Figure (spheres, rainbow, N blue to C red):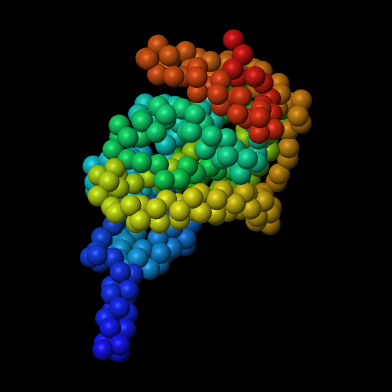
Length: 351
């Protein structure tokens, strides 16, 4: 009697440790950028396998289809693909989504800040916590942000040398999103583009150079067609986000949601560290490949910042007129930056 009772209790305990019903999900995760982009590579090397491992410990199975490098959608189409359910998860470069996600463009309207990406992403996390409208904008596009993704600081990569900012005059400079505004202080022609297009655009003469972040210069071999790297430190930027379709998210058990969010938090930090460390390595590789690196002085950097119109205030006022909290986001961001020890070359919140 004792033997059978013990066996029955052990069986009951074992059953209690297992989920009521094991489930299997088939998820597609996409990116318009290739895994050369560190935020994408960290999805493949950490987020996907780690979510699978931890969900398996709960007794469930996830079968992933990973589709990067525009296999399902280009960088400008990932937001819509996740919203429509074509993919359940996506690496959304929100810097291309100024119309649909205007509040998330804040760092691109406040250049010449810090090159400390880890510190910047801490500010972004706090900004989301203080401004509910930022999460609400993503919900309006059918998805939830699991992890904001930052990128390392921007510099000039050009086919010509830059000794002063006036050397930019008359040249066509490519970049992405609202970073185009950074050329308003000089007599250069801004041209909109995206990372996968920059190499060919410079090699064919469509651009004379680009503004881009350090960690991509060597992997994309930009130095081959534009050997002059001029460090100006426009600052690290909040550029992308790992998101999940809201209907998919709401259909998941709470314990699975918890696992996904925990791994997403880890992914955010891994991606930030990867970009930070990758920047220095990328510059060294570029030099080894023949690039010439120079650096504008702090005085020239400050002069450049002052030559720009107050693009942040213009942006905030325009959003206020639409009933969106533009001024609140700008002033909160500048306050949080100051509290974090981040100094900008000018006070973008000043009226």
